[in-house]
Image (cartoon, rainbow, N blue to C red; front, side):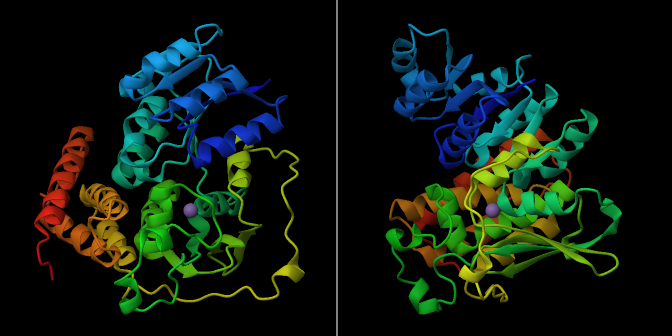
Length: 389
Ligand code: MN3
């Protein structure tokens, strides 16, 4: 039986790579649903190529365009953000790949879990914002959340056949991004173009900036806590600039397992879609002699404060990781629009975390409200260009 797949965010970096994976294995996968936020042209192109059952364009202004272009195809077209949460509940879906960017993935992810769909999770922000709620819900509904993030896929693969209580700790590897080893002076003057050049991974703009600021690793620490049910002291980050070891689990007896391979997101995507099985792929194989030196170093949390802020948010818990995420989305956007210096981003995030009302055990409406307020606070801080210590 073919696995029937919904891809939320099919026009992004993960979405397009997932379509590549699916088209390489037509005998195993069937595309049921694709969705996009703004990129109507690419969405139409993908729809004509794959003929899914349903297409959703979240931006309602582009609905007429998509609907007209697909009028002669046996494809249902829906528009609007709310449609995402509805289509994920369709009977004809086995697994939902959540490849949306940022907070926008939260409600559709929750809707998919409520409809008892297994999740291939590529939207780490939904776990950062509401990891406790999502993992509880997934447990109640007996739904598997299979990570697509390469580090978490690595941990997940290392844990096959293991008991969770035997995990001593995990090491999430970090490439260090384009500014690894750079001084504070250098970081004070970096341009958007410099920040968008990642040494190892080809990714969307938001995650590439997050990688440069180490916030991506911070978000991944929180994501790991909820995916694997870990205490914060069990999660460590180690910089590994070659991005060959994707992460490591250390067990109670001291044994360590690592998952390795050339950096290519298609591998964790394929694994998430085939778990617990594996399919043969033609991905380029690793050659040890091309990498005679795999190196490791400590992350620089002095110059890259975002990683420390994420640990702090995780330890405080409640709605603070949600505030961290919202503030980060606003500051990344401001940086990309040349309204905020790269080095100022952690100051805005820290101040937002301090200004938000702390809620220890938030429900979904508290998260929605926290996200809204944190965005307003961050925008104000950026606009006022307040001198923050
Ligand atoms: Mn990652």
